[in-house]
Image (cartoon, rainbow, N blue to C red; front, side, top):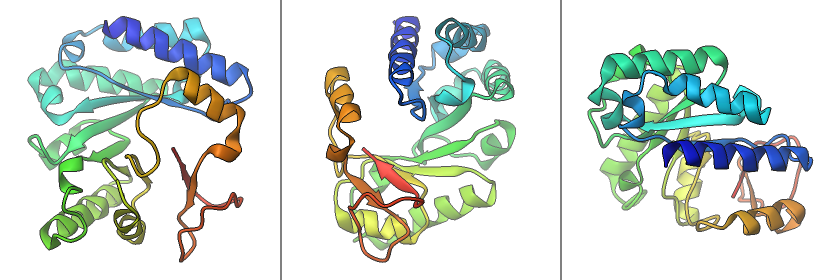
Amino acid sequence: IGHWVMQTAMRQLKSWHDGGHNGLSVAINFSAVQFRDPKLAGRILQIMRETGLPPSALVTEITETALIQNLETAVQIVSELTAAGVRVALDDFGTGYSSLGYLKRFAIDVVKIDRSFLIDFPSHPHDTEIVSAIIAMAHSLGLRVVAEGVEDDAQLKVLRNLDCDEIQGFLFSRAISREEAGELLANPSRVRRILWANESLDETHGSGVPSIVG
């Protein structure tokens, strides 16, 4: 199933690239079982060569817990992927072992803050402090930060003030089908854009400003 998911996702992304949307990338979740396979990096890169996708178009997502279940193999896989230009995201950060040593040992590009910290955010001061600390720590290590489970404008406003790089969640969209995603790409005016650089939450199109599209 994991191999089928990789092939299907990358082939679809290549189709969108060929349709003129070559700035898109895809993030794929990988299981602990997959990260026990020492040939996983080779399998991923082979599919990328077959589809013609550049390595920068892929983000591999893996949880902390899955990483440590087979530490040496995981280190090897992540090293091979990053050496080839594939980005690696540490998913559900804060819910597993959260050892800072893993951030040092693994060539991670992105930290994804688990949605459990956003449930009472920003009304609960402890959660706000934890999120703030994770963002500051990740940025000090040169990592990008994604906040998961963002559902309202109050959360978005605080995350923007904390310099969170990206967000995902129901605030923008629930899960949609491949066909619905294709329709949005064909009609970009329907896509909601939140511009981070402005003091107000400007939902206009703008240009030259970092934005989140969802």
